[in-house]
Structure formats: C-alpha cells, structure tokens
Amino acid sequence: MDGGGKGGGVRTILEVARAAGATCVALVDGDLLSVSPRWVANLAEPILFGADLVVPRYIRDKYDGVITNNIAYPLIRSVFKADIRQPMGGEYGISRKLVEKLLEDTVIPHHFGVDTAITVTAARESMDIRETPLGLKIHSSLTKYIEPSEHHPYQR
Image 1 (spheres, rainbow, N blue to C red):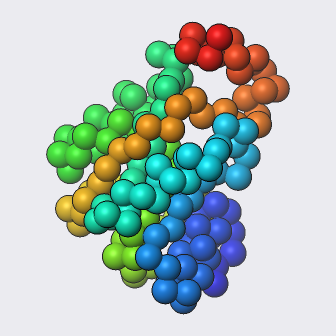
Image 2 (cartoon, helix red, strand yellow):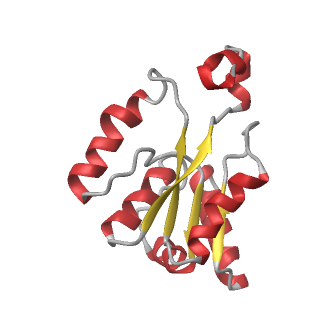
C-alpha cells in the first residue's frame, strides 16, 4: 500500500476495496461539514445501476471554482468531449471496473491531483460518467474566513 498525501490515501482505499471485492467505492473529502448520508447515496446508487464514475454537481457562487470553471472544465470537455462541470470535485462514486483501471494506471499522483486523475482516467477510457447533485460544499477551512450561510443565496 502507498503512503504520501491524498493520492496515496486514495490508492490505499482503492486497494482495500479491490481486496474486499467491493462493487462501489464512495469517496468524500475528510474536512467537509456539509456531507450527509444523502451524499453517499447520490454517489453510490448510480454505480449500482451501471455507471463507472459519479462526480459531484455543487451549488456554487459565481466566483467559486475559478480554476475549475475556466481551465479544468473546458479542457476536459474539449479533449474528451465529456461535459463534467466539476472534474476535480473531491467526491466520487467509483465502480469496480474503474477501481481496477485506476490501480493499473501509473499516472495517479501520490499527493495532489488525484481528483483530476480519476476523472481523466474515466473520460480517457470512455467510461460511463454521471453527475449527481450534492448541494453546497462546505469545507471546515471555509468557516475560518466566511460565514457559510452568507456564502450562497440559497442557504440564507
């Protein structure tokens, strides 16, 4: 099993899932305050019905996600013809087929960038990718500089 940052942690989770014969893996960032049981169901259920990758669709302020909106999304869409609004969201549902592909793939980083690598691998392999609504994503670090309830008009 791999050490290191988030990428190493994700690789370890995928290795354990493979060894256990898991049908589906649901990943969520560890510092989220907004995660709920519904999120896990939204990420996992499409996998159980044939999807290979489920990516999040968040409610976001127009100024949130500048890199995602202006670089990652257009790049993934133009190169892979995949309309994935949040290609590096951090929350995923992953099929057994994609787990196997990710574990054999040598481009999965050990530290940062694993989120994008998961999406790119599924898109490159023309796998079934679906989006699921998760609502507002609130990291614990967000509360240090902004009042979350004032962050988005739908949360007021």
